[in-house]
Length: 164
View 1 (cartoon, rainbow, N blue to C red):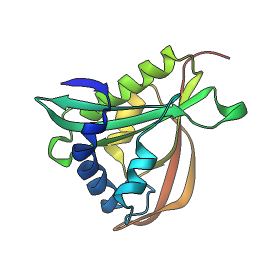
View 2: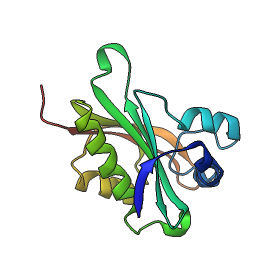
View 3: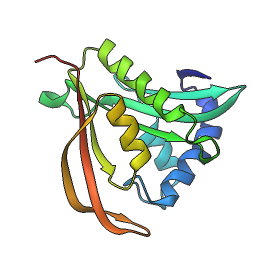
C-alpha cells in the first residue's frame, strides 16, 4: 500500500468511501445527507492543508485530510480526519493514514495535532489514536447523536509534539 497526495482523478473512488461513512452517521458529525459537491469542498484541502489517499493496485482504500486546526493564534496546531473503505477496515490503513498525517504535521512545524470530535463509540479509532500518542483531553457529554446509541460523548483528543 502507498499513501500519496490526492489527485482530482481519485475523487471517483474517494466519494463512495466518504458517502458510506457519512451516511452511517455513527462516527462523523457531517450531515448524513451531504451532497457530493459539498463533500468534495469539505474534504479536498488546499495549501497549507493536504489531502491524501491510501492506494493498492490502483484502488483507493482510504483517505485523509489534514491542515491547521484553526487560523490565527490557533494555527500552530494541526488537525486531521480519516476515512477507510468498509471492506478493508481493521487492516491497518487508518493507522497508516494517521501516522502519515502526524509525520506531515511534525515536518510542517506544528506543535501538535488536535481532533475536535471523536465519537466515544469509535473504539477502534480511539485505540489507534492513543497508540500513536493522542490523549483524550476532554469529552463533551451527549454532543453526538449516534443512530443506535442515542446521545453520546464527543472526545477532544490531542497529541503534543513536545514544543512549547
